[in-house]
Length: 69
Image 1: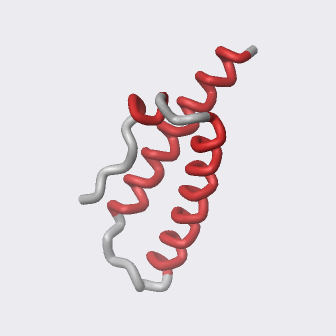
Image 2 (image 1 turned 90 degrees about the vertical axis):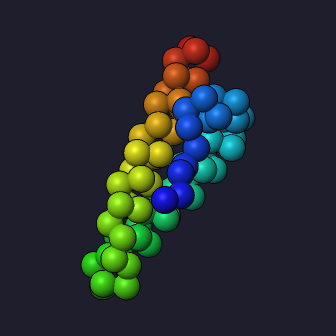
């Protein structure tokens, strides 16, 4: 199973990189949901992993925004 970025590595990334990765993950999740619906993809765990990575990413982004304000 491919492992996404961990929160510790995300904290080392720049704000622009985090926002770019968030956009990439949103697109990946959309595409994956489409493939799961049309039965092109059978591995439903990929969606779960992407959701978890996206949640970690949003947590780090919110931490950064709280520090800045």
